[in-house]
Image (cartoon, rainbow, N blue to C red; front, side, top):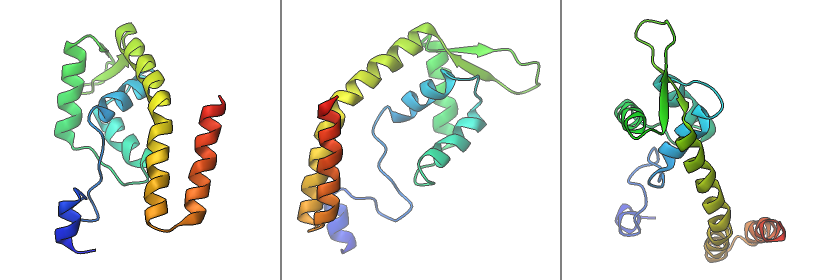
Length: 142
């Protein structure tokens, strides 16, 4: 596919770019901070592992968001006794926001899978299309 067509379709300009939905980093931070105290460095390490190195949020994004989330009452700073290290845990408000997000994701996951099946049909990948349909049926069965 030509770069012009990729650009017109809104696809990443190079192989190292990936589309991350708005708000995803915030939800990942709440997920991590809901299970253990986390630092910005740990977030920048965990996200690439989770996404098979397809996405590495920038330090500016991570640290800005940590500050905003603390200011908004979604995260709590936990004193560590380690000089220069700030650890955060999710507040009750942050946990509630994350739980609501999970409910919304479950509702929308089926729709996204249907669209992925349509894309696999367009790519004439019948095996993938059948696999996606099978996964979508599992979601609606719950």
